[in-house]
Length: 374
View (cartoon, one colour):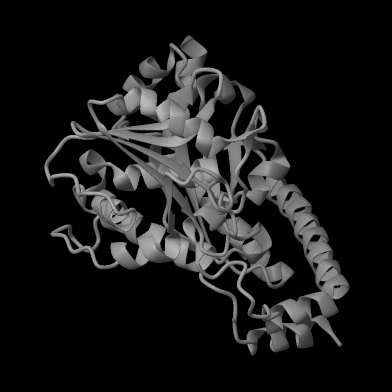
């Protein structure tokens, strides 16, 4: 089967994979520390936008009394008990000490041969003493078979918690950041903590089946694309530098390969421009290689924080160029077509014309004159 036929089959496939959640993007979906920090944020009335409602939903599931809506609470992540361990969350209110041990897929650990919940319960008792009511919670996915060894830790599953949280109503705007973080956590829990480790046989998606069947062909096509893109880059640079002979490619901390792979190419008229943190920049869509770009434009950039930069910026300002940010000048957009040599030469010709235009030449003269008097 040809690669084109593989692509046709891929385009006709139905996606059967679940929604990709925020922690998955960063590879943190099974990281207890990361998810615990998120949980702590959502339980904190001073930050979450929902007041004490999320915490009270958890307390109710643990058989404990609610915290008054506007009562101040203090949350500590990874509370260190001297020499015996760290509990994931310690919440202190005027009346309560709340200890939460948070497990995703791990089991309860031992401290000198004693289960951690038994050790933590004794330590929490010392903190609460007789002045405060002690509440201990063991939060985990329902599919995690771990049971706390200490009977005073009350088990709450994510299935129970998320069901309760979905009943919470508030006055937060639907598109607010706080609402997004709350809803996204619910989505994460539903997709990764409530569906995970279920007995249903996992469906191998059509795209995954095609990929494993034609993996070699797909990898070979990707390698061929990189080779073709690299060859085009080399031809483009040689042709451009011949046509625009006054200019050269600027290579500093950004290697030439890095520039071309990230949608830009830095151009200078003389190497001294680099000392001024000034250059022209050829830009295109960052998700494309140059050979497949459909829109190209040129900008004049004044970057960096060297001591002389502010003096050069003053010269640009005097010459009528904006100096609020690094972009001093932007060309019109060129509609690019590199499908054959003739069309590619036309695009390169337009690039050279822009560089030779009065605005860009004026900008270059400011930099040249500044350097000559430096």
